[in-house]
Amino acid sequence: MTVIKVLKYRNCGSAIAEFLVFTLPFFTAFLVLITAVQSKSMAIAESKNLARQAVRAYVTSPNSELASMRAYQVVDLYKSTLSPTALSNRDIKLFISCSSTPCFSRGNKVTATIKVGSNQSASASEYVDLWR
Image 1 (spheres, rainbow, N blue to C red):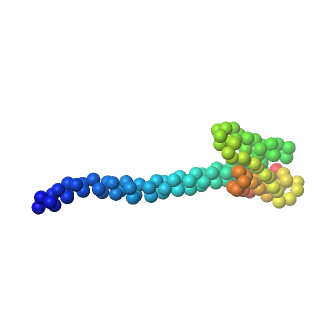
Image 2 (cartoon, rainbow, N blue to C red; image 1 turned 60 degrees about the horizontal axis):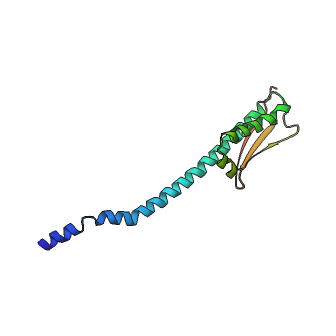
């Protein structure tokens, strides 16, 4: 009976040690994976939103001379909110394409494509107002 009591007291911290040794590395790897997935999904959502904002600024312009300037101004305003490190890590480019020429004509479909870096892009399309 005393041998069992001695063994019982000697093993009282082993469950915590096993938890720390075996499960803590798995939780750490899981946390890193979840953080990376969340960061990538937020970057995709930001680029889609930026493309939507740029094409909206383009199609709601009062005339064709201001349309491109307004779309690029949206991207420049977004870039101004980024830190210098984030701006140097993410090269953001805007490309505007139209279904027919002239681009700023009634009912024309305008597509804005945002490229962030070399492997991520997002597009959004809008139609120029028919009652211009």
